Amino acid sequence: MTMAATAEQGTGIGHGSWERVKERLRASVGEDVYTSWFARIDLEVVGTDCVRMSVPTKFLKSWIQAHYSDLVLTCWQAELPQLKRIDLTVRGAVRCPPPPKDAKTQLEERRVERIDSRPPPELRIAAIAPVSASHDALGGSPLDPRLTFGTFVVGRSNTLAHAAARQVAEGRRGDSVMFNPLYIHAGVGLGKTHLLQAVTWAGNSGNERKVLYLTVEKFMYGFVAALKSQTALAFKEALRGIDVLVIDDLQFLQGKSTQAEFCHTLNALIDAGRQVVIAADRPPADLEALDERVRSRLAGGLVVEMGSLGEELRLDILKSRVAAARSHHASFDVPLPVLDYLAKTITHNGRDLEGAVNRLLAHSKLNATPVTLEMAEREVRDLIRPQEPKRVKIEDIQRVVARQYNVSRSDLLSSRRTANVVRPRQVAMYLAKTLTLRSLPEIGRRFGGRDHTTVLHAVRKIEGLVARDSSLSDEVELLKRQLQE
Ligand code: ADP
Ligand code: MG
Image (tube, rainbow, N blue to C red):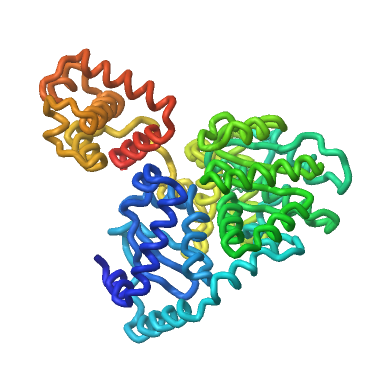
């Protein structure tokens, strides 16, 4: 345990807060997701407007940042409303030196005072549910000024989504709505949030219509909080008073009553001819947690998928990022061969492209050196996903799988057939087949002398399950990452 964490828990209050934050997280994502992503998150230190937590691997850090940062922040804000951001570090990575003792004592004291002086819950909640609807007053999620249509690069994979989003943004009050809801789905980092925020900026700029952008967490917590404070009616009325409701990351919508309310809100808005725009990481039919009625209502509008960013689009995005950076840092320049290299190698998502440009900028500023190919290779090494899976050892697979499922390695090799060891064993054999070059008979031998047909059965079984069961597929993905890191 770190010094900071000890100090944190020493106050008693911080520890209780942290436990409640974790409970809230668990309640909102469910036990399985919680165990996969949050079981190993530790609290490091609570600052004035920032909480620092740590996780054991880079992969967990980036996954949590990409998928759950708003949710984690919201869960914390329920304890400490003045928090503005969360900070995740990788344990074992270089840490900033702890603040001098005096400063820390002060920090702790201030925190205690803040907790004690929080307004009673009714007041806090009323503040996000005023009757007059405007983006900020309604508790709209924060908007990033850079995410506009002006900075959105159009390419083959997003032409339709972009055109639909523009159409929605340009609508005027009273226009008939062409497609409702507009539902955009795509994988992580492919521009959903960018497009949704662009709609919000553009729609609000004329001041004629009210466009409200909410992450689904804000919707859930705003709503649930409002219910508790009995201002639900006001909150609903306010929501219904807007012209365009934009909801991001719908896949996180959870809970029966919240769902029912979401459904009512959706119906009320659509029936009143108001536009709804939604983004999620999967098509409506795959939102298993949602009621059939909601799914069909969602599918009844225009559903558009954005595909992965092609190389050409990646290059254009990089160019536009560099151009934007140059408007503040005139001396910053990235030669075309470097841009080509980045576009070829950073294939995963837009967030990594942005990260790469930021690093090159930081590096060239700090060292006052021009960007070269060699520097770029060094700086972005960790953003490049390996083309071929790294060689992994079967023992490592067994160790990591055993730890993940809380069984022992000898359980995996044994002939026990209870469910709690059969599935982990199958997963481990599947990983052995996919991550190593070992043959089926050899894998069988390494798993307690099993026959190669048993291995084949396990591999097929897991392949089949992974295709249908997204939580298993996430688990397997997590294991792969751990093994390849
Ligand atoms: P998502 O919400 O789908 O996970 P984001 O909208 O947050 O993804 O995009 C991740 C990053 O990639 C952002 O910095 C975004 O600006 C950038 N990006 C993605 N697609 C585009 C695009 N077509 N043009 C410009 N930037 C993009
Ligand atoms: Mg997003």
